[in-house]
Image (cartoon, rainbow, N blue to C red):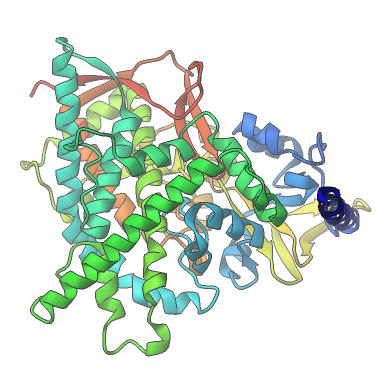
Length: 553
């Protein structure tokens, strides 16, 4: 009896896999881009994925070998066009109706963020903050019309006090750790503390919710932080990301207990459990306040979102349902928590290696005669602004995004390439379904744009930016960090204000110094996100050990 069930199922799966494999092979062999160069494919199942996981800088090496446009292969041998040609990238970001997130990427996001994540486009990632704010059932413009008030400059001004307050909590925690060691300095994993404080920030500023991740008044580590650490910061995080993508490409794999399914399910359940609590509490508070508290005076994002969603002038067709509001919560968690902690950690790492820049920054920060600066006061500090720009250029938290062509198109090129007959062509024919790898980090560190020292952290470069940078698509500072076009990162102001607040408090309080030899810290990637890691650690995972020495004022 069991055989009668198992054999037909196995045969069906085998046929499905065979047909899928033949489709991939046919598409690759018949692709109009097959004339483009690229690395060999070491494995049909893994493609070049394992190589890229093992070496986060591999695509940069390939770019030097093959140029701005080349083909590599992802999972199951699917070909992807890697392009860092600025004309092509400008076309992609301004034609967001054609170049969208692939169905497999959406399914991968759902595996972690639940069914609600399909409502939005492009995880924060990456980081890239809240890129998944476009609906499959309504237009991106409609969704943003509701969400924009939560991310406006007036709202960020109200939140800056929260950013500074939580930064002070982190400063005081590290000061206690140093004092407990009875010395004038201590080795501290700053990424761990930054992840906890940014979770507290997104809790208070995002939801009016106390995660207690930093203080741990309950005596136990925050359960959500623990779950997210297992998913994004463990030695197996990249494997988990690969398995999510594989399940998105081969839906039947969702039936199998692939590596990471338990920790991902736990993280998703905790995010949505907290999300429902937050939305219900916020709705109750708003209902109790009625019209006694005018719109624009709430500080947390969810309250602002709910208030805007209830506005009488908003057409019913543009209102978000309760389920759609709850679906924001995982995106807020990941975008407001993971990317900002990574960016701040990279800033501290860069400043630890560039002591003159750190000293110059501290001297500027000390000119403010306050421990609780406003957003306008932070934005008026020119060297702080340069440090933030340079950090987000040299260490973009989101390394790449992936797009799929929803229809046939022609991709214009700024620099010609040779076709299969050796002729120069100024465009690439794009077939419906073609995957495109958009390298955010590579564009930010291109020597053709930023000069031979593009890989170096040098804030002074922002005194006079090169003319080539004006062609970089981006919503902020001639950088690709927050993406561009109609689906740029809606929360970039939130991220910038939080990053400036953290640096203001921490650099005034501590001198940060390297804790490992030069070259010992490098990128640790999990999918499109990158964080710092101690490369010599036996169990690789994200971390940033630094020596913190209190500043004697």
